[in-house]
Every structure is written in structure tokens, then in C-alpha cells.
Amino acid sequence: MHTTVSIDIAIFGGGIAGLWLLNRLRQTGFSAMLFEFNTLGGGQTGHSQGIIHGGMKYALTGKLTQDAEAMAAMPMRWQQSLAGLGECDLSRVPILSNKQYMWSPRASKAKLMQFLANSTLQAHVEPLTKESYPSVFQHPDFKGHVFAINETVLDVPVLIRELANANQNTLFKIEDLSEKDIELNEIGHITSMTLHAGCQKINLSAQRYIFTAGTGNEIAINRLNTKALAMQRRPLHMVMVKLPFHAPLYAHCLNFSARPRLTVTTHYRQDGSMVWYLGGLLAEEGVQRNKTNQIAATKQELNLLFPWLDFSTARFETIRIDRAEPLQADGLKPITCFTKTIGNTIIAWPTKLALAPKLTDDIMQQLQLTHLTPCQPHKEALAAWPHPSCAIPPWEIF
Ligand SMILES: Cc1cc2nc3c(=O)[nH]c(=O)nc-3n(C[C@H](O)[C@H](O)[C@H](O)COP(=O)(O)OP(=O)(O)OC[C@H]3O[C@@H](n4cnc5c(N)ncnc54)[C@H](O)[C@@H]3O)c2cc1C
Image (cartoon, rainbow, N blue to C red):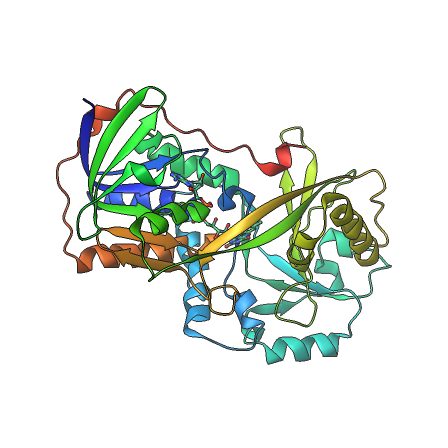
């Protein structure tokens, strides 16, 4: 015989989506618990570059869609929380940069202005004078132009830690789920789930089961055996460069296409050293390359883009990580966050860290539509269960 625990809402997956949602649900009076099988932030969230996009990537396509507008509202939502006035208290989360810069290595200013004018972005872009360029570009050999865009870059490991601390007693570590742990009734709704932690085992019964498990959402999709939903993975081969010099940089290198050629963010290791974390086309096209070739391609790219910097004693490491999203007909990236209700289960992907507040809004709306109301919590049954720890940032592990 094992214990049955009844709660309002069970969340599976402790990345940004699950942690933001948990916070909001608890504020609204629901008894909610979050179950994580590995570490908090150990999936896409902890590997992200921490940029709170305001729609730049979408605007470069030249189309001002509704979703680009929804994205444009996100920085304000985050700013409120970062000021301690929003739905989550993020006042202790460091802002690594208030701006993301955009540069083009060689193009004329007129060509760049023309490109930006053709995007829907020009209202948010600020051309800079040389004196206000980031220090990396203040070198006489830099011949390009730099613009600033209002994209905040956050310290994601601290973000995860702050969200976890706020809800510590409702976060639980479980062993990985298998399909047979999910019990369904005759109409395909989840009736209960069997959860394991070491030698402990419970039956969990919830009014709603919400999967914010990134790639782990696939297990629920398979068990629910639904044709209404499928997942796609878009892989990245990111590169980390431990710098032998001081050069903080938060910037997109423009390629005159819808996707940046290189996106650089800078992260600080505990030993005080600085790591450039490199994404953009380098990471997308790099999925075809093995680690040695990806590092070689990175060195070539850095030497081309920053010929005045000496990377010969820098240390390089790569990391492969998949973005998890709803399947798109064209295999491209979805334009906004995604939720799907199937019976008493919701499957959700934010598709961007920045969209976590909107994803939570969408889920809250779906709960309201089904008139879900809070019932009594039964927390004490899990008093002896382990809590998940926060993930070690990737730039600490090389
Ligand atoms: C390299 C990279 C850079 C990015 N940079 C940015 C950026 O700068 N800005 C931006 O807005 N977006 C960025 N993104 C996108 C963003 O990181 C993701 O959209 C977002 O973090 C997804 O959050 P999530 O909570 O849905 O998933 P995840 O962060 O993947 O979290 C899912 C969690 O679920 C857990 N889990 C899995 N299976 C189970 C299970 N069966 N039971 C319990 N738990 C389970 C996992 O261990 C994990 O902790 C980036 C993504 C990548 C990969």
C-alpha cells in the first residue's frame, strides 16, 4: 500500500516554464506541486543565453505579426519583476546587460540602416556613436557599425535559484517517469500517477496535470496517444570560450538575413573568469560538425570578426542541446509559446525563456475556462521527499 496525495495541480518539469507557473498558481491559491526528475534549470533554461527578446528575431523577417507584438510586451513584464513589483520577485536577479548590441563587421552604415528599415524594428534600434560602442569594438581596427537594442540579458542560474527559493517546499525530485506510471481512465484522462523517489512511492491525484518538461513532454504525448499534438526538436551546438582577457560582450552579429550570424553573451564563472557563450547561425549550422570541427569553425569565425583580439590561449568547449517545441509543418521555429489542453492535462512549451510570463497567462486562461477552483492542499504527505537542486551552469563545467 502506498500513500495517495491529492492536490489541485501537478506540474512536471522545473525549467523557467514550470517554475514561473508554479509561482503564479500558488499566488492564486491553488495547491500546486512541481516534480523534476533531474536538476532545476538543467534543460534548455540553464543552457539559454538569458536574453529577454522583445521581438527582434521576428522583426528581422520584416513582418509585424501579432506574435511579434506579444513578444514586444515581454520585456516590460520582466522589468516589473526585476524591480520587485511584478508577479515574481526577481529583485535579486542580476542583469548582465541592459542592452544587446547589433553589429555588422564590414557593411556600410547606409546598407545597415536600409536593412533595419526593411525590418519592423527601427523604432527600437539606437545607432551609437563610436564613443559609446562596447569596449570590444573601440579598437581602431574595427570598421563596422554598432547599434543598441533594448534587450536585457539576465543571469539565468540566479533566476532559477530565486524562483526555486520562493517555492522550495513545493518542489520535489522524482525518478524519471515511464508511460506505465501514468494511469488513464476509459476516456483517456489521467486518473493518477505513480511517482518514485528512491524507495519511496506515492500515488498522485490532481485536478490538472501540466507538463512543462521541455523534451520530456513527449512522454505525456505518447501516453495520451493523441494525434492532436507532436513535438519537434531543433538542435544547437553551442560554444563556450573561456577568455584570457576582459571583454564583456552582449551582441548579435547581423548577417542581412532573418537570423543573426553569431550571438554572443558573457557569463562569469565562480573563479572570476569570463566566458563568451556563442549561439546564432554558428550553433545552428554547427550541429552538423563534431566538437573538433565546431571549435575550429568558431576560431575561424572569431578571428574573422575580431582580428584585433588574441584567442590563441582561450579555452574552448562545446555543448549540444535541443530546443523542444510543438511540431511545425515547415520544421521551422514556432512564432510564439504553445499550450494544448487534452482532457485534464495541459502540455506547454514557452519556446522562448522570454515568453514564460505569456505562457503562464495562457495556462491560467485555460484553467479559468474550465472553471477550476482551488481545493485543500495535502502537502504533509511529501514531507520526507527530496527536493531537486539547481543545475550547475554549463560555463562552470570545463
Ligand atoms: C542554447 C539555447 C539558448 C537559448 N537562449 C534563449 C535566450 O537567450 N532567450 C530566450 O528567450 N530563449 C532562449 N532559449 C529558449 C529557452 O531556453 C527555452 O524556450 C526555455 O528555457 C524552455 O523552458 P522550459 O521550462 O519549457 O524547458 P526546460 O528548461 O527544458 O525545462 C524542462 C525541465 O523538465 C525536466 N523534465 C524532463 N522530463 C521530465 C519528467 N518526465 N518529469 C519531470 N521533469 C522532467 C527537465 O529535467 C527540465 O528541468 C534558448 C534555448 C537554448 C537551447
